Length: 240
Image 1 (cartoon, rainbow, N blue to C red):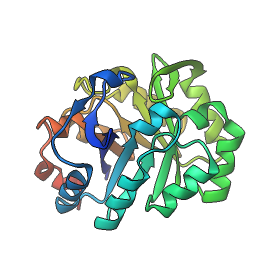
Image 2 (cartoon, one colour):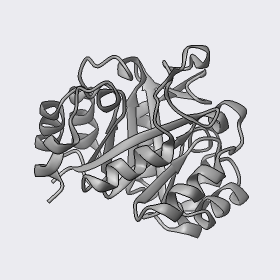
Image 3 (cartoon, rainbow, N blue to C red):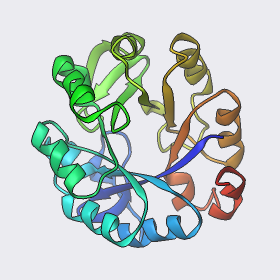
């Protein structure tokens, strides 16, 4: 059964949705990050993806306090991402309550360093983000294009024992046009042993069901929930 992992993106201390790489047009949602997290927990959600957008933009973690608050007032497993670049960032994230961390820029540009995290902290706690547009990796809060091939990057870490890979088709994120099921199917065909976390474009429970059918391990979504297209009560069949 696919794992349901709602996203909470934080910018200027608020729960937001940001168009890919466009921080000036962030859409602010009314509830505080803690309120949103508690709502998820009340509906049977067990894991969330907490994104420090301030950290992603600045290249250093900013919102440790919100991570610590959610960890202190819920029993959720928190996957924390955004601005994680150093060993100190990783250690502090875990000390503040993260169950796992997700890193994108370091994984793409400092492969030896990121590989050392897999050894030091274990493959259960380190998630590699492979976010791409037209098959090329995008880093730095989706502001920096690269020439790194998506499949090549996944393959590099696949050979080194990566377990969890989050993949976002950046062009679909926030568009509510459906997830990149063909892309995810191709990834799973080439790298059958990874636990793939799909993100971007999810608009309905039916989309989640289709991702489950092709073998995706977990699904992350945000906008579809915040704008009322996914009702948490309708996710109960996936939460048993």
